[in-house]
Image 1: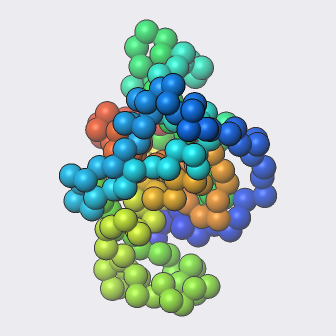
Image 2: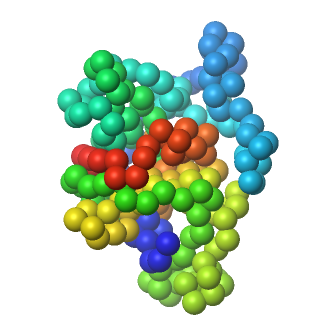
Length: 212
């Protein structure tokens, strides 16, 4: 993927709302979430189930009234609320919880999803390798880090271009589901692997995206 801004950022100086407590009893009320975030053994790299007790329930995927006012088919990232919306017809939207790194706050505007990739490689930029020499084994010259459960881009990546130019910002998966709804040390816009797979299957190339 080349040198990505997604992997270069330091910890963002921001705060998030206190986590809601999700109890096993609460999960029993709506078992659809347990199914939604269950294991995915048929993936190229089998994905384990999400421990929902470690994710604030407000960030579970769900259909909501559209708060964005954008046209159906548009993706909207609200960096203040840690939500991503896929606007649907009829005044509704699919809402996903996201995690953001400093890089995820640095870019905003309108662009397009120009390219999508299943189980992408990750290539740390030279600046990151200079700070963390142990990452040199994943440099562009050596082909990057192969896909897998430990890859920082997770199971899927959607690449954001503006005016035909790669912004270096991505929507991507993460195995670190406990970081959803939080500002983390690196990354652009990260979703649970189950959510990025769901989104990937719904979003064609050249889908408009708005980052606010």
